[in-house]
Length: 333
Image (cartoon, rainbow, N blue to C red; front, side, top):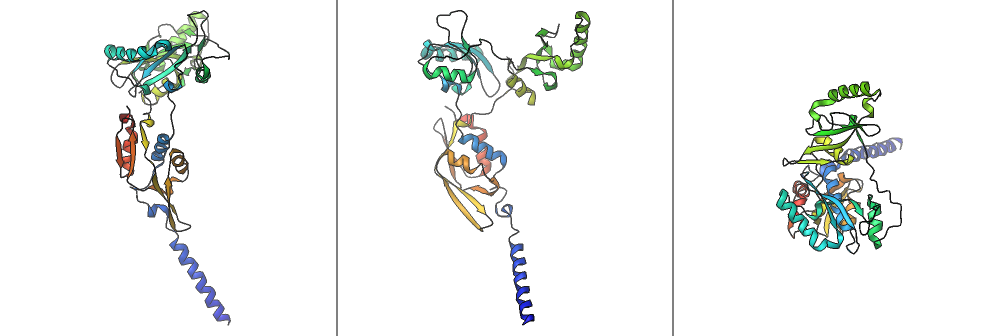
């Protein structure tokens, strides 16, 4: 009897070991490299399924205000503008046409960015200018604003340690207290930090000051766009964007392409040893699905994408999907 029990126990343990060996199979063993969804692709899928509210979509065209802003395309071309809402219907198309005739840039609504909204009526003084996005939204709700108006935009500084001196272009240096370092107003980045240190030392000697390199920041960046035109920016966000790779650009508007629903996604569950197919009905479902473990997911191809210009793009692979999302801007109106 004892031998019989030992035999049963041994068989049981052997079965468990064999089962555990079989379960060593991973998702990677099931999903091929072509089928697997990378983190980068998942981020692009979520970005496409997430609605981006453009600055032009914020505007209440029934208000009487002056808009201050700029157009910027994906190559970093930038042109500033000022336009009255009262003359929007005729003035906006005319503005874009004049920019095209003078500079050769054909901007779209996706290239439209606000920096301020002047709500002064009849050119009154002092002016009432809203510089913050939340303030514009408040004002455009009913064309009135009852909050505090400072009439001053907040300048966020870019300090020397944040500058990429390998980039081309020029900058304006200032020290604490808005003192312009002499002879460096249009200093080329190629001059390097050593040139700045020499001038700062001379400035301290002549003015009996003790500024250090940590006190110095830049107010303006002049850069060359991807098409070779000179542009300037005062924005910290823009300057840091440029110093990342020596190009000032922006991400393509992923709203130019939209997933066509319903579509299906497979999820591999190794514990249950099954494949669960989920039908995605809308952007919210897609975002929720791809915010989980993407290593277990694959699309059931083909799927379709619809461009703003009416183009239908049929996708059969992850590679084709990534290429389409990377070039989403080409499918805008």
